Length: 255
Ligand code: CO
Image (cartoon, rainbow, N blue to C red; front, side, top):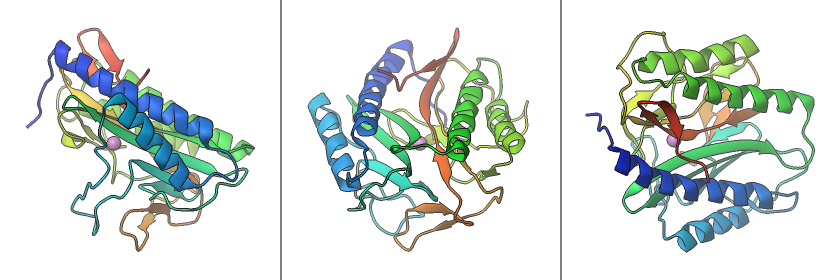
């Protein structure tokens, strides 16, 4: 069942989204060489606590995981792209860090992710980051009332293929609202003109993740969470929570 939200509910989701945006900005600010991933997770916990928000990540245990998620951030370094668990790893200059964060405020959830390099950014990483963020923009631009779900998926997949990056339709976007994961699934590739019609009130997390090596395969660490490229190449992940309104897409995970 897909639940459409009222304008008032979308406003409440934007308040949760603003907390997510604040936590991501604080994390990026603090992510310097020598900083431990656990310190970044602690910082995000404080941002959520000060805002009176809780974490939809902490303790989350979907069917694919064999243990509850232990952090409020996913921190994925270099060839890790999704669901990296914050541990005592110390960031190094040139590391590519993907940060995924959620917040629940007054019963409504926002979910967003950014990727960036710590310190120096290589030309190859700059291109990967730019193209993955461009795919998020293209997905959002396709999230128009009257369009179809497949239009979002196709817009994302096209950017990956044109850039020659690896693309996976597992762990794509999703409905979001009262909980972090709702219907519908928003795969990161698909056919335009197919799938459910996008109506005002539909709220989606759109989240492309690409790996630089062109191979469409990934592996999961023995921790049951961390998702890495199968070829050791670096990956990037960008995500926003977006509402479809009568006037077009509205990004909710902004300050
Ligand atoms: Co998400």
